[in-house]
Image (cartoon, rainbow, N blue to C red):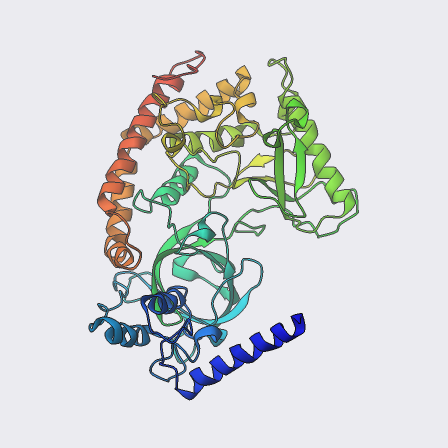
Length: 498
C-alpha cells in the first residue's frame, strides 16, 4: 500500500510538471494549485531577493516571459494579471560608490556557509578617485563565494565570504585573496559601528586592525544594496602577523605558535571547551574556543592549547588579586587596549564572541588580545537590561546576558586597573578628548549617504542621520563617564552607575 501511495504521488507531481511545461497551467502558478495568487508572487519575489535568476522549483511555473530566467519582469507580469498594475521600478545603485558585480555559476543561490560556489565578478569604480576598476562584464575575474556570519546570516540581507582567484587590491586595500562582504544589516547607527570600532583600535595602537571600505553590490543582476568589503581575519604578513602553524602538527617545538584563537559563542565539532569557573556547573561556565589557525588540530595541538588556556584561567581566578601569575600567559597591555575600545562602544558581546587572541611561537610568548572584530552589539545593553541606570562597566556585570569571559575577574586585579588607567590617559590625552570622532562619523556618513538611500529603498532601513546623531551622543556620554572613572591617578573606579 505504501509503495502504491509513493508511486501515485510521484506520478501526480510529474504530471503537474508536464502540465506546467506544456502551458496548460497558467504561467506564474508557482504553487501548482491551478491559480495565480499573491502567494505565487511572494515565492517569486523571495527567489529574486535571494539573488536567484534560475530556480529549479520555479523554472517553468514562474518564468512568465519564457526566457528561462526569473526576473522582476516575471513578477510584474503576474502582478498585472492579478492586480492590474505593475510594481514600481526595482531599486538600483546610487552611482556614488564603486559597484561590485557578482554572477554565480548558473545564477545559483548562495545558501550555504560551508560550501563555496564559483562566481564571476568585476568592480566598476564609478569614477571614484583613488579606486581602480577591476575586470569588466566582458572580461570578469573569478572568485569563490559562500555565506558567513551567525545571527547575521539569518537576516534577509546576507553577509558573504569571498575568495578571489588571484590577489587583488580591492578598493585601495592591501592586495589579498580573502575578504568579507559585510551587510551590516543589524547596524542602526548609520552603519558606523565597525567603522568607529576599527578607528578606535588603530588610534589606541593594537598590533593589527582590519580595514573595510563601502561598495554597492549587484548579485546575479539584482541590486542587493550597500555592503562593506573587509579584511578576513587570518594569519598573513599584512594581517595577523604570526608564524603559521600547520594543521595536524605534532612537533612539540612547533605547536607553541602561532595560534589564532577566538572566544566564540558558537560551537562545532572542533570547539575547545575550557572550564572557566564554578566547576562547569552551567553552560555559561564554559569558554568555547575556536582555533582559526591551525584549523584541524592534532591531539598534541589540542592538548597544548587547552592546557595553556586552562592554566591561564586558573591563574585569573586566584583569590589573591595581588598575584600576577596570570600575566605570564596574557599580554596585559594588549588586553587593556582591547578592553578600552570595547568599553567605549559598550559592546555587550565583547569577550564572549568574535573575541580574537593570537600567540607567537615559543614557550615564553603570551596570548595577545586582538584584532578587534564585529561591533554589532555596541550600545545594545539597554535592549537586554531596560532598567539599567547610568553607565555601568560591562565587565562588572556578572552574570551578564552574554556571559563575558575572563574580563570581570581580571578587572579585580589592581595591576590591571593601573594599566588600564595608564592606557586610557595616554589615549584620552593624545587628542581623543576633543572627540574628533564626530568628524570621523560625519565624513563616513557623507561618503555612504546616497548609497544608504538606495539601500533603504531595497531593504527598508531607518534614517542614516538619526542613527549617526544617536551614535555620537552615546559615545560622548560614555567617554565623559569613563574619563571621570579613569582620568584620575590611583583611585579605584566606581563599580556602579554615575
